[in-house]
Image 1 (cartoon, rainbow, N blue to C red):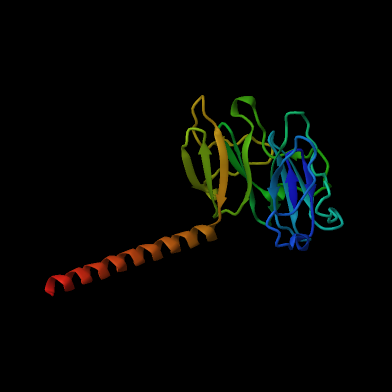
Image 2 (image 1 turned 90 degrees about the horizontal axis):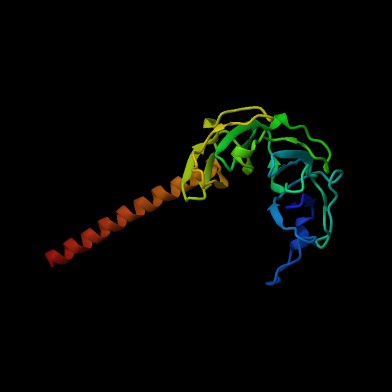
Length: 232
């Protein structure tokens, strides 16, 4: 499943990309001044959540009856319409049961909202608010589907990064503004938001422990070799 800045979405079969061509394959025909912003693997049971820069969102089914698969070179169909000309699609995510939609603004405000507050409706509408925005807090910097034990990383334009668990972000309704999450200066803003799953963090910590153990073992071996040389 592909989604573009202008709100176009397109589903094609994974088998269509079974090629060893080093130059790659055309995945979508883009219209003028449009770019791909998201790509997801989906199945018939999945729902999609489309979120715009100005905080509007659409949830729709990804089954073949709602979104028929298209050929690689097709251009796609309208997934979300925008209320203003300056709005655009920020993110497309797969909606998973019992998850949260975490929204973060450029001004450093955030909230988490149960995915159950979004009803799956048809594509091509202007949708409903994912977050209530005011000018001084900026547009959305990120919108992610997360589990409660996932972690969120937010990066500001001045290079500052914060990390927090999703369940530490205040829960709030869909049509609310959220709370202060990251303090940014007058000339700075949040520029990127990323998710790290609990499983990924556990795997990373396991690798770090293994590397540490390997380093200690290597140091012990080097020390033994040095002692043997001194005795010789």
